[in-house]
Amino acid sequence: MFVSSQLLSGLLHLILIVPFIFLSRRKWTKEDRRMMAVFFILFLLWTVLTTGFTNVRLFEGQLWNWTGKVMGLLMSFFFIYRARVLNSRETGMRITINEGSFLPVLVLFLTGLLVRAAILFILQNPSPVFNTETVLFQSTANAIGDEIFFRGILLGLLSKLYPAGEDLFGFKLSWSILITALLFGLTQGLIFQNGFHLQINLMSILMGFLCGLIAGMLKERSGNIIPAILFHALWFLATNH
Image (cartoon, rainbow, N blue to C red; front, side):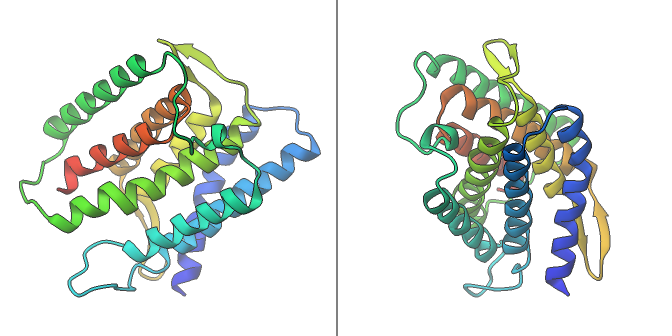
């Protein structure tokens, strides 16, 4: 049953982004539809793998979902290196960054963290508790796994279907970035749990969307996934340390 509830969560997330997918693009070729089918299937598989095994514990006193995140990360690596649908530039899985991107990426990175700090102290209650496992989880399995999948794979797939987007202070804000950010936000605050009981946390959805939006812009501007991973880790450590 737990797999069914997680699958239902994934289906609900996809249903909610469908209007944005099809309203933002009117003409679809056979190859476009195939690419979108890959997008949907991968997301559902990732959802089941990462959230369907939260009760599997690797060590005593475990607080976070290490098993699910590691399984999702392995799935991402398998798809990238076996399917070969996306190249290293599209996934951001490379060493170099785009020429001239360092300074604007640094400015957006720091601005995003300042926005996060402002929201944290104005609208939320920062936790003073320091937990070693939380820091390790948020900065490794969670940040790396989520960014490689959402900003590496899903954003890479959608970038094949949508144009580069509008220029915003030197950054391209495209439908592909907006859709993946919205989808990421939904995974943070809209889930079925405990016998198909729908739990909604609007603040978590908003925070996930903003994180995904900035991370997507960082990845696209730099052409590298690392700035997005670092930003993701610091963004979520703000409330989970």
